[in-house]
Structure formats: C-alpha cells, structure tokens
Length: 218
View 1: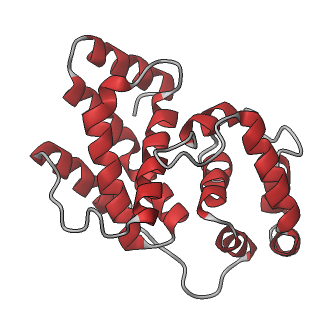
View 2 (view 1 turned 90 degrees about the horizontal axis):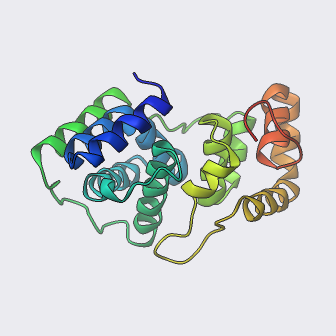
C-alpha cells in the first residue's frame, strides 16, 4: 500500500484529471476495512456498523470531488464515516435493504466486509473494553481515532467535525476540553485499566485525556 502522503497526492492528481471514480476506488481500497472496524467500535453493533459503512462508502463515492488538501484523505474519510454513524444512530433502519448505486462500489464494500470481519466481545471484558463500553459514541470515536488509529488532534478535529445534526466539537481545543471532562468522569474504569493493563492506561491518560503530549503526533 502507498504511504498516506503518497495516496493523498495520487488522489489529488486523479481528481485534477476528473477521474473521481478512480480516486474513490483508491480511497475505499486503502481505508475501507479500517473504516468498517471503526464504525463497529463507535456503534457497538455489527448490523448498524455495516449499514453505516455502506452509507459511508456511498458518500465517499459521491463526494470525493469535494476533498481538498487542507486535510489528509484519511482524516476526511473518517469525517464521512462519523457523519454516517450519526445518521445511523438517529435512524437505524434508514438504509436497511437499499442497494448500492454501482457494481464497483458494491464490490469494494463486499471486499472490506470480507477482509475485515467484525468481532464484538460479548463475554468477559478487559479494562479497556470496560472503558469503551462506558463512553458515549463520540468519545468512543475519539478513543479509537487517537489510541488505535494514531490520528493527530488536528486530524481528529476534521474527523469529528460538526455533522448535519449540528452537534459535536470542531476544534482541537474543544476536543481536548471534552476529553479532560470525560477522563475525570470515568475514573473507575481507568483505575481498573491501570491495574490490569498499565501501558494502555498510561497511553489513555496522556494521549486521550489531553493531559500530555503522548507517544505520537500531538
């Protein structure tokens, strides 16, 4: 797979040539699997995640021409995914049973589903799972983007920008403030995580809560 920077340049060149479908194919081929897994983390329901992923893929296919180099392609696609998640949460059955608009798009969605199976724990949970379960969808999204996907705060601000419901922080400062408040209100699962998985707990405190720079790009 090309580097993130190389993919950004390739997508911008395809868009410059008017090859939007090729650009969307490259983006979904590169990030489809991780977007589907991200939606499963956020929504905590495999069926809802699949519905949201289908909508996300469709929106990427339709609106890739609106991508600009002000952000990375990856952050932009996570923004599309977050908007799809919020719409699915508001109306879980809105796209149930609807066909995708092209055979190529359907192929890309099926490929992501095949290559990235969704596993949601239903039995004993470790401290990190307990923490995820205690968070609301937006905080689960933030946790996944920072801790699992290693997005910078600037990229997370793009990925969690206000959707069509007009809700959600849109700046790095707002995200950090929100995270600090949630960190303080989730002391029990975080304490449990320190005892069972100290390395995860330290990363959570320094990276997710905004209490420190963290081990990767702040």
